[in-house]
Image: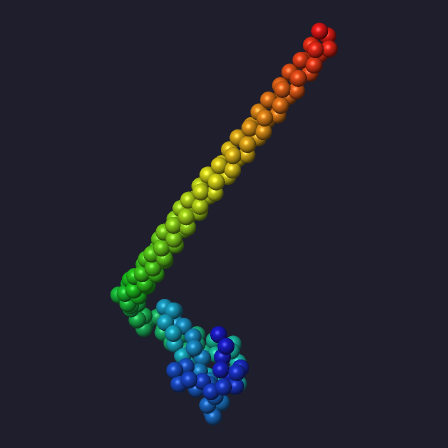
Length: 161
């Protein structure tokens, strides 16, 4: 993601003002549950120090006598259910798109098959015509040779006879 600082353009109020006059910026991070959080950090702050401060502020309950806050299992389950429903909806849309494409492919394939059947029938007719024409030409030549042989035989018979 390109940050507005690199572009030297003002940012929208939705993402926070990273160009404030007191040399601070807003860092967008995620907590342990993956929920987005943001915190204001001085611009000249070292990122390593920022991480160290986060762990220190998150470790305030290091005292074993203090009770650890209960985890929001119902929230986790609700988040899980909503994300599963979202994934199922996306999967359903993909399935519908896939079925539409398969239907389109079936139409395309049957059209190609019909076209190829027509072409192959025309090729067969052309070949049959060529073979029949060749057979007719061959028969004409055979008849011509028979007549020539008969003419030679009758000419020999007249000479010998």
